[in-house]
Length: 69
Image (cartoon, rainbow, N blue to C red; front, side, top):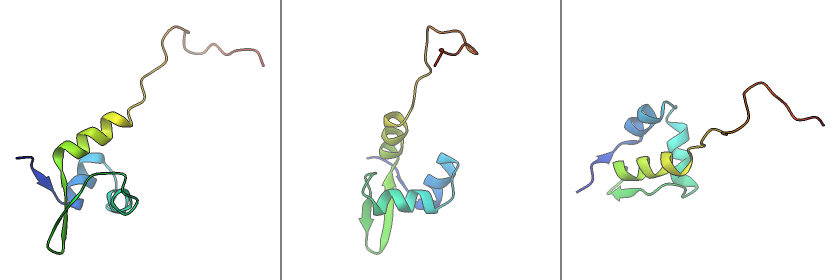
């Protein structure tokens, strides 16, 4: 079974305040579980969210060169 994290634990893992994971829950942008009155987020959902929102660096153009406008 996946470990269930509190909103505070998710905020700490993401390096954000607690408002950010609460907003993700409110907007249904992350999977969550209701345990009575409590809200928990599966650890795998946090990893999936990070993976889905990871932006890879551009490769091919040397840094510092810009295209002419």
